[in-house]
Image: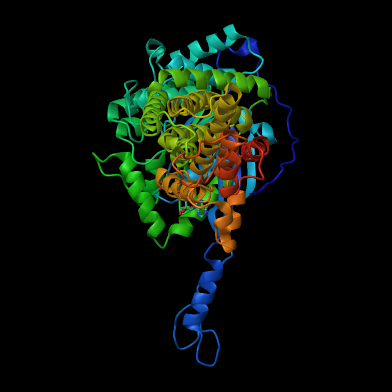
Length: 628
Ligand SMILES: Nc1ncnc2c1ncn2[C@@H]1O[C@H](COP(=O)(O)OP(=O)(O)OP(=O)(O)O)[C@@H](O)[C@H]1O
């Protein structure tokens, strides 16, 4: 990212967020947001390819490039290294104003809003972004909140808990009572005091539907999350999209009531109905990355350009249609220039800068973030027992089935292959179980991404809290599956060796779980996670040393087993089971293949391992992978 917002003459401000004393009221102190000459460019990914393609097509036979002047008449294509998305956009939003950013699809509304909310992390941005006439640097985010189009909320939390979570993480330094009071105020602001104890609801990971709030109510909870910090400006990406007309109007009334408390509301909208359109005090129209109007009387302005709104036509529809028509007309640039001149000569001249306010916000410590995140994860875990239930019941059933197949094994030669089989299939089963949680990890990822975009916590405490709760399931699954099978299969009867085997199974399971979490977070889709994860598992199992002892693997890729954590898990449990163990030889004169467990280890190429060394590698792999 390359942000080059120009510094105005005024110096950057020291910012101080109200402490507990001003938590009761909303700011009362709206802020003026002005942006000047915002230009946004992104690299043109097609630049290189397009260049060579056009060169091939339009090079004449003698190697000269052709253009308008040559006999083909075809113009040379514009081969710019960067695409300009916004071309010098300027505007002012006054304190307590409610502003709609409109424009045809792809005109740059979301881009402009992301830049105004300082959420753009790619491309080059130039221009000025001023709060009450001053540049406020990194502290800008203390002034504003951003509400995304999707309501990504934790379904198992109540409305009150959701807001309290934001209050805990964003109102550092406030006492518990002050946070409660702030949450109560926000509940009132969004009109959901009566639903404070209702669960948000929605589709739980695994497909169970939890009954909860309506779409409009969820949208208001999302707005509430943004209001907890008492922001001066709130940005909303299409706040009414996806809602029925009544719910959309309720959301808009909520936003309008905020402006009466001094909050500045800026929303991108598509085609609102007339009642909603009329609630916006100012309309900004962006067409092809340029502002063509920003003001309170759009219909008159368009009328002056020759676009008159017919009677009984939704003015929002009319504005959008006119914007499209302007974008396609030959007068487009002329109209943009006209607006620019008007902006420079009249709007800037008549704009006064309100008094400056200061805001400062303390960040909660990592340990406090961890505490809050752990508390929420723990509650979510118990309120959504489906995944835990399914995974632990499956572990018990599979353990019993393993027991049925491998029950009551002895150390006779006939049972040795079965002992090795049960050891391998336990490792393999624990490697595959995390696949049942892909949807759980994916929903966690969506929530994490949304909350991280709002920068309410650091990923590290989130990851540790999430893993600690996940550890409960992993522990139960590993011990249930491993313990039941170990007991019924009558593996080596030694308390120390039993606990050692359980430890290895637990670590192999944690490692496999982390692997699936990592793939889920990287790919972001269940299909890709399943494809990559299952491919990896097959390779891991193939090279674990069970199907083909490692010394018998082809030399060219036999080394792969060194990279395979399942191999080390398998090796440590095998050594645990067989080292220095007398095995029963046949008495009928049949040759005795493995008179001692050490012979089994030798046959499988595991005789150079101690159980501690092999387990040590599993632990090492776990700790080198966990930061992922
Ligand atoms: N990082 C980027 N790289 C390349 N193109 C981009 C990038 N960001 C935005 N654009 C392009 O800029 C244009 C404006 O995008 P933007 O999402 O702001 O439009 P919009 O007006 O919000 O559209 P819609 O109403 O359909 O959401 C689009 O053509 C988009 O493809």
